[in-house]
Image (cartoon, rainbow, N blue to C red):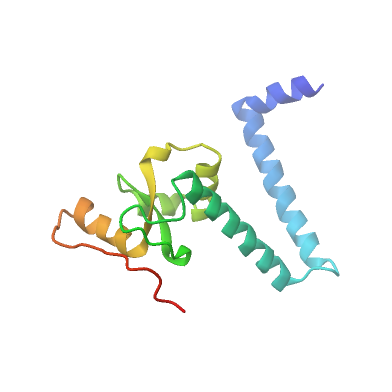
Length: 146
């Protein structure tokens, strides 16, 4: 029976029906969960942030580490995943950052199209490579915080 079910889910119709079922199921589950006596909004947000942080760290490790590929910045709070060929803004309209991180961790994208840059170098990449304006340089001198 499981084999027959798996074959059906592999079809376009079965996949679509399963997706719709799971979407409805998860909406109902979230509603029941929020109505439960032991539900704590602050605790759920904390857990979500921790999980998001772990996925983000793993994605950056897959791309070469938690360090800017341009200037060597190691301040994790300002590191970003850069689309080397451009198109990051367009992609964000279709998916969320978290989905990109998961795709990187699960090898669902070409890792050669991404790298880790700090916010400053990411902006510099846009100015130099996408807009074609030259003449800027970024140098990291270590942590200034603390």
